[in-house]
Image 1 (tube, helix red, strand yellow):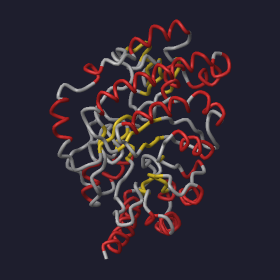
Image 2 (cartoon, one colour):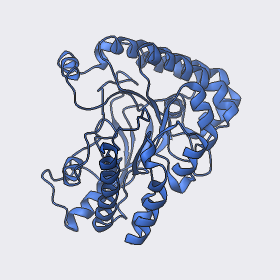
Image 3 (spheres, rainbow, N blue to C red):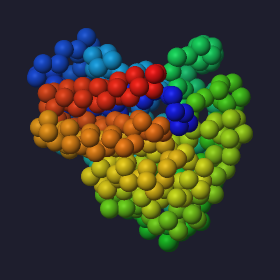
Image 4 (cartoon, helix red, strand yellow):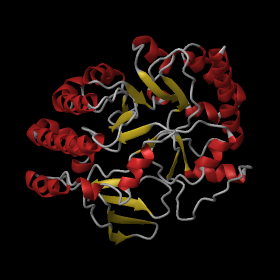
Length: 380
């Protein structure tokens, strides 16, 4: 990520939908740790390379098979609501339920978890709701860390992997959960002071708990999660980003810089072209996953932003076709930028269940061959 000319290109993968792994097991994949029946096809089996595992039952088997590099790990920290809301089923409709999740969101959830839940109502509808809920957003660090924290701190001193702090929340992503997708977009106009108050509080929360952790542990990367873009562009304008988000990004990233953290990534799906200059102005150094179907072309991004760090960018939909489609995608994406540094190629989100085991094997084997050749030449 420092664009060092001799640094090797890493073999990482973003992750997999559980439905894809189940399909691959039917098509010949052999795993040491079978998937629990409790996991639905719509659950994520998150690759270790992309952070704290969400499931993580079979990705080690897949990574060992393809000789992938050890990925980054995220410090196990609750950086959002504490205590969480008790999960409560409000209505049972047979195949699906209406329930309150751990963040106080009323959601409609498929019992088999074959698809993500749909949010019905978020916990903050008024200023009064916010005053009550922000009591769950206090910097009680001892309650937010695992009980084996001291042992983890010791283990981090002799680690063999990049260590990451943050993730899961951001200055659009968190208000989105607190207020709700549609209501948040109207509140930017109808009650902007509420959004500013929420982000000010969140910023102070994260600065407080992250500062305490960074006094104990040195990290390799900070991570902020947003998911604030759709297929054709951001959900809010650059001007709104500048007003409602940029000041808080700058304050939080200033903390990271004070502790010597140089690599700061944002995870946002969709088309974020218009926001890249603002992320860079805020001090962000990298983005992922660069969803191709949303217009994010890593070759063109590299041309426009030569020092932007990138992870992802390989079109998952190319794996729906045959070997020729996969080869065409890899030839285009890797030919001009893979050896320049600051880029780790992976599928541009979780691998979907429409991808066959044969197609994934061809993709990963071909990609590994390109990486091995580049790394071999770097050693000469």
